[in-house]
Image (cartoon, rainbow, N blue to C red; front, side, top):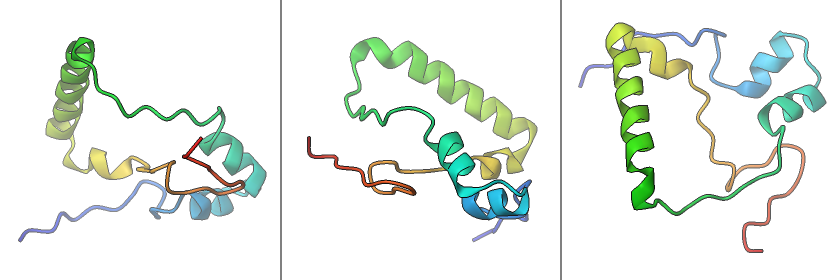
Length: 91
């Protein structure tokens, strides 16, 4: 299996490590990563098809231009991770 040779733009995959290297306090990183109230959206509706297809085409075009582009996205799962507070996904 081929492994892509890439390096994240910030030199790390960790948002917290990036913040530390930039001299940002944890509270600022919390505001950046979780600047708004957590909103759980699990349902895909038929009316979302056009937007989802447009987004997928845009991502594919970015990857075609620069294969390493996708590796600079901060992928998170807010329902499973919390940095400065607890997340209750059952209410």
